[in-house]
Amino acid sequence: CSDTFAGPLADSEPETIAIENYIKKNTADYDAFITVHTYGLWWFTPWGYSTSELPADYNDLLAKVKIGTAAIKAVYSN
Image (cartoon, rainbow, N blue to C red):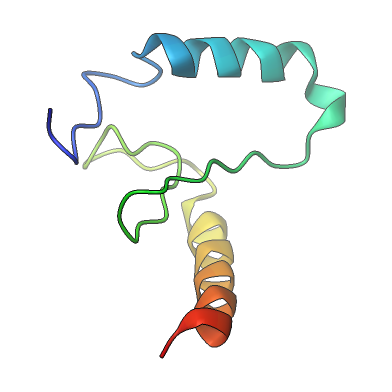
């Protein structure tokens, strides 16, 4: 029941496994995949299950997250 539980390992949850399997079968249709979480003000990146491992393109992912969050803040911040 934790708001921040990341699961015991990557793709450990049935919903995540189903989405990953679908995307892998249809890779030509995707450049990116973004999920929207309506609880909290968080932007998640891959590998959230680990605090010690990062994907090879982490710096690129982080740069894109910063662009996205800045754009959202520009429109919706008070």
